[in-house]
Image (cartoon, rainbow, N blue to C red; front, side):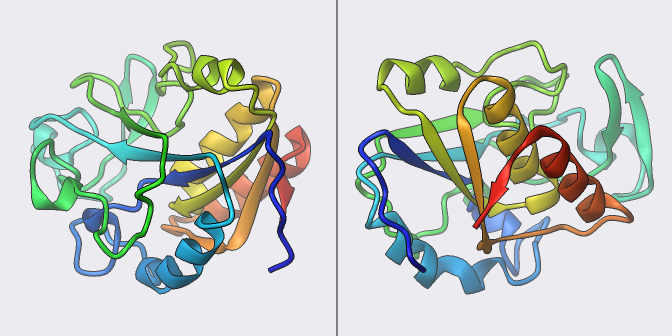
Length: 204
């Protein structure tokens, strides 16, 4: 990959946690295959941020919280439609840990999201009400970061939402295609790609 980061670039590694990788509670197919290349790319960046899904037990996004089966549809949450997922990335559990095969010891920030019981958080910048900030935008601006490269899981949810919000918040936004994988719910990948085209997310 021909990529030479600038001083004002940052790599944003989205949710590379055990529960999202093969063998985990909400596994994304092929997620672990990216790890060697992701380590190689991360080593080129001076600035790296890692996000970590961090749900309390009984989180609103868990199908079990509603007596329903995972992927059985959506519910109407106060902030909009909420997909019903398996219990995943529960605070303090092994599934919530960043995969130990990742070499990200030089990461400058680990940002936890989705820790509010009554609200999910796909984006690294905003909770799913699209109003409550995580604080990441302010952190990056204070560090004079201008361009963001996104990798991780899942392309059609947390990676996609983060990349779109980055543009809305005034950053250049690039998704590295070979370093992300999708959940692939019906229509989710195409919807993400359409949003990228509409709002101006670049793909490498």
